[in-house]
Image 1 (cartoon, rainbow, N blue to C red):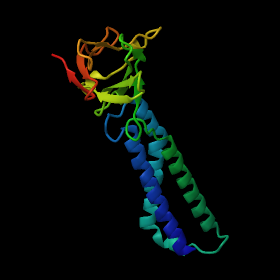
Image 2 (image 1 turned 60 degrees about the vertical axis):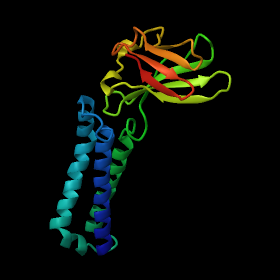
Image 3 (image 1 turned 60 degrees about the horizontal axis):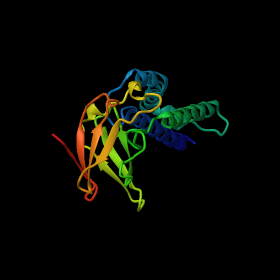
Image 4 (image 1 turned 120 degrees about the vertical axis):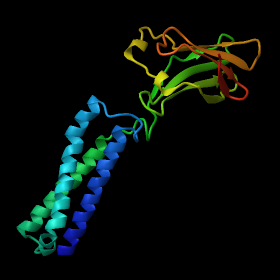
Length: 217
């Protein structure tokens, strides 16, 4: 059991270190946003205990390796204590990994505007705000051809700081943040922010043929 205990000890430390990094990546969306007050609380509840436990196991490995190698006997108290400690450590790491948010880095965090139809009834459309409050935030227009059912997503030229959605945006009944209107050219539409989108007032030329957008001056 001596060598096996040492191997299990090292493996547990590796799992704990992985859970620490995973939690760090998750709470910062892979460093796409700063640590806020809510995240600080999560660090106190989940991250710090795991960090302390990891350091404790590392200290035992470094300074008490002879004790780990000396553990023997199927029912020895030392062996039972060591296995219980490893079980607690692994359970803590798994729970921490399970509590780690994945939105904004592994999965997109999406805020969806009201689904609308153009006045010529050729397209259904809505706007999605992706990963707001982060460095990788952006806005995209989603369109669906009402005749063919073809869908497309078009990214808009908007700075990350202009993607912030607050509770003030959610009026009741809901009001659209953007509206899109046809032009004299069949494939060209104009997408504009409404007065309910409080961050910026912009207009974009949407080319339905090339599926591109151009910010209008």
